[in-house]
Image 1 (cartoon, rainbow, N blue to C red):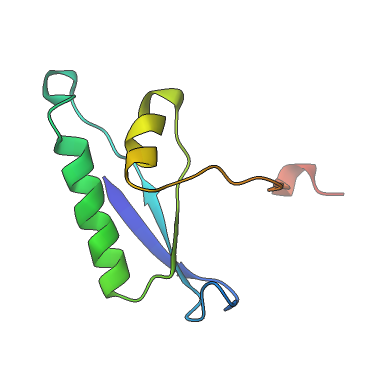
Image 2 (image 1 turned 120 degrees about the vertical axis):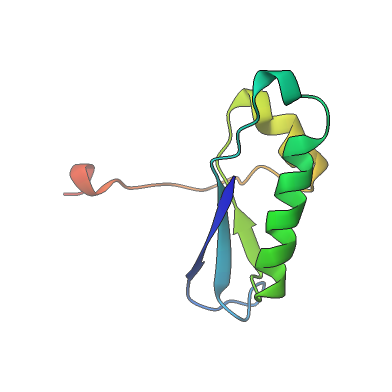
Length: 88
């Protein structure tokens, strides 16, 4: 797993503007359901917070959704995306 740090415009819910993007969390099948992915995520989240990240985002498959929800992540509503190749 990994976490990328980046800056966005500071806001009331993230005064520092520093954000984390949790990505590439993968556990081999024989190690799944043993707390490995959760421990990796917790460590990455802790490191991002230590560096001042006020928000952490991720994208998930249905398979990983319950893990991330157990860590406190929640669905974002009213979120739209415009890809560069579809912008007019």
